[in-house]
Length: 116
Image 1: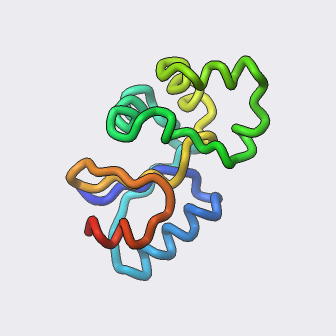
Image 2: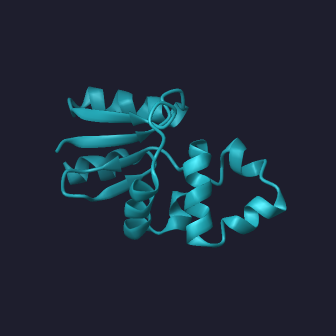
Image 3: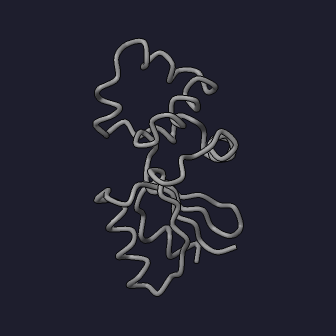
């Protein structure tokens, strides 16, 4: 298994990640949420490793536009993961999955280098 990058292609943070990986000569497989929506099993796998709260991108527009009812759903892992599957733009990005199963959320160049 090679490095897998999960996210949305047009995101600025994703673009920085792609540029960094390419400049370092690191091969990767990109999984675009807009073309291949994350399923429940994938989100549960991520949540088991980093916690479901960590998966939520609280800086994005989608999160900021949530109403009170949707915000309440984010307090429970089960309902939060359902919402993240439906609104994949609300998942923190990138999620970088290493061949050994380790995850990094967000663009962290030094952390990526340290795991390679």
